[in-house]
Length: 317
Image 1 (cartoon, rainbow, N blue to C red):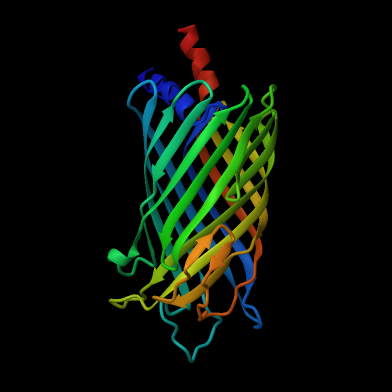
Image 2 (cartoon, rainbow, N blue to C red):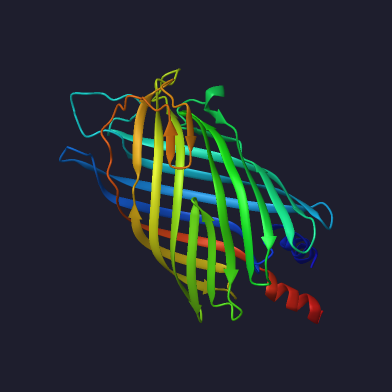
């Protein structure tokens, strides 16, 4: 009962219009046949993602947010060429790119209409062959949320981070809507993410979008990094979700298309500024061919804490 009360306190701070909190998400996927532009060769991209969030209630109006995100992407960065040894890849010409992000933040409620979330997102991102101070990056996310009605909430914010290629930032505009019968849901945080779904019985059908930009330093066993990967990816997918254990464990199968472009640049070759989809002062020299997008298949498992059912249990007791 203590854990239930903690989450019930945290719920209005973090997601007023939602009746759940996703505490853990694990996903594994593969993108098939990403072609190297102007060649006859291609690569696949295998990905593993883990996201964990834990709220710690400070008082009735504030909660501390902690947790972490981990990702691993494995792919070829260059076309096969047995006569050339590329820097930062293994003997099979594959590279493994890792990112570990720590979440440290504060969620606050000011009144029935207004709330906010501020999160620091320090991270380490490289091939993890070596780790030094240059692999640490600092980012953050700020959101201001307005509860328009019982079923509709607007959000406005800003995301910013340092990367191997320079400084990147993007504004966030979105909303969350849940229909009165709780079957239709929209969760929008543009231009980063979007999710529209419809639930019928134990099955949810949906479409989603996720835009990501990251960088990873490449070492390949050397003491100093001589290059880095600039990842820009737009993922569009449809999914079928099976809601089990009273909708607390969700099993999701996704199929879609991802742009998946992994560009390699020399360390120190940077842009002046990145804002959303625009890069300013970008005169970098790309070291590998462009990688085209491809279709992907992904499976996700989500542990969801359902507020509504726990509230009902609390009232009964």
